[in-house]
Length: 338
Image (cartoon, rainbow, N blue to C red):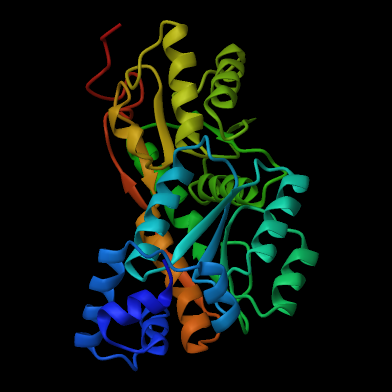
């Protein structure tokens, strides 16, 4: 099957078929519909490589993520792909697993496939790869790790506001012994969330609080919570750097025969879908994957299609209160229930 047969059935030129496939606005809606019907009837699948060579555009966008096992990222991938499909574009997903060598392979794949833009939803990226994309004039968008200029956009997350809302909620319930389980300190996003927590406590005159480092996975949250429970001072509330950490912490608390939130309150971060179905349902700081994906794709698409300069975008987290938080022991409705 080839383009000439499509043109013959639709009664148009091969050039018109090509323009229709490439999304040209020079084709009338009636002609476009006729060509599309012919394509469907003949089951013609355009050669995307040939299209890329002819137009200089691949209609393919890269999405680099850190950890495909963390539900936050598959939910982000789904949202990004959903909007890309609406625009008739494809998505090439690469998972770095927080490994620099894997990152290098991911970038190489993007360059080989001549992507039209890349959304870098990871915590860190080597400057030499950023320069490589810039040299090839490939638009980039970062999640809170970039600086907007020319072909580069950045989506900033107000972590301080999100963590601040969580701390305000916990303090309002009477908690003063508050712990924080961070992500790996080698990651900028983990350091930012930890610093936001420390700053929020200090601004309320509570002190630095108890600290443990996790790995942004349930296993790390479980181990960090076990260490907190073995310490001299047991916290009455714990904030976690992400929901997977909080879910691991829930398990460690239950294993010790303690109750959430009667003995210890837990707050996560991200609001992944499963967090609403844990026992008890997790109070968390919501970070909309739909909004991040929509902003990221449109920043790339407008840069590639319309020549728009890179911009700075903001995503605001919001506290989602569920049943994993309650009054500090002895200071509310749970007092006396031992």
